[in-house]
Image (cartoon, rainbow, N blue to C red; front, side):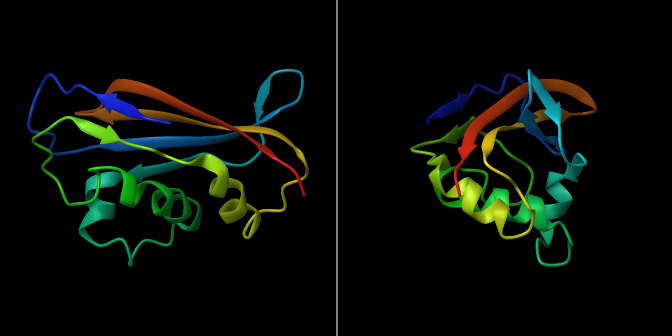
Length: 126
């Protein structure tokens, strides 16, 4: 999957991400608590945060995106060749996830204004 986000107002000095794990059960419904991440704070010191779910998710995009440094961001955001095949492996290590269809719904904010929704869908087969 490739994602290109055109940023109209630069620089980005604060970014908040809300991640909601969802399961398809006659429609996508929450199956685990949502996580809110102050991304700029996380990037200043990712080892201090005890955010196992987000750390695992970020490990999947760190090497395929330009979201790999501290704020401010002065250019568009790019994810190239993002492979979701390893996503379920990282999550099942920490969460008991039965077979099924899942999604990670995310909301991206800057300056406390919702700027984007990004949903990633995947299937777990044990």
